[in-house]
Length: 291
Image (cartoon, rainbow, N blue to C red; front, side, top):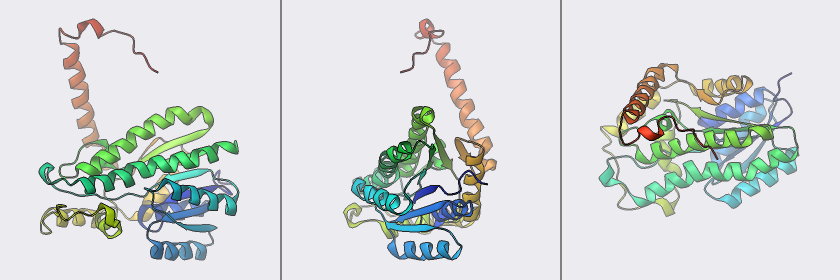
């Protein structure tokens, strides 16, 4: 029997794309599924599709940037399924794109509130509920390959996804002794509608001065790369595979390995250069102190 069977997963941004893919894959493992999403129309469609597949599912409307709404998701999940074992912080937006000088405060705030604080709130609310039953569990945070290295013209998206990677690394050490396994999913291009996330931008994050990239260049090329990405159902199955093996970093695009090797080599070279500096020679062999 699957180690996920009979347990409950809460998945933000679960109405479509990667979130729904993970919901389907975990549901196939006989987990109870709670999908939460800001798009209530697609949320109901997704819930019906999962039910038709024989999956026990609860749908709850959620704006991940609102902590109080997370609490309502938790309340409804506990009322329906009694326990929560997994939180998948999947909801995310592309944010504004373009060069530095065009960056807009409201666009940045939207990306920060959804991509970063949505993850913080999800973990803050759900972690105590995972702890209280003593059966252990999982936190899966969805970042991106963009979170493993900067991408030009995607400053807000890259910064927030890098923060999610760092948060996941921090929480992994914090929660391991409490029986909660933390993983961070870092996909590259997947066939989703992330490039159309503007459709769900609340009015308070809209600004007349926000920059819109040239439709014939940057936005168009991004859409093409997304359309040429891997089929979304692969991602959900890959997450299940990785969780079964206890993986922390979950990668879906092994072809990006050379890119990461190049970045790691540059970091190694920078450390070597710092060790050669007369200014730093007195701490080259100093013991590392950790909190």
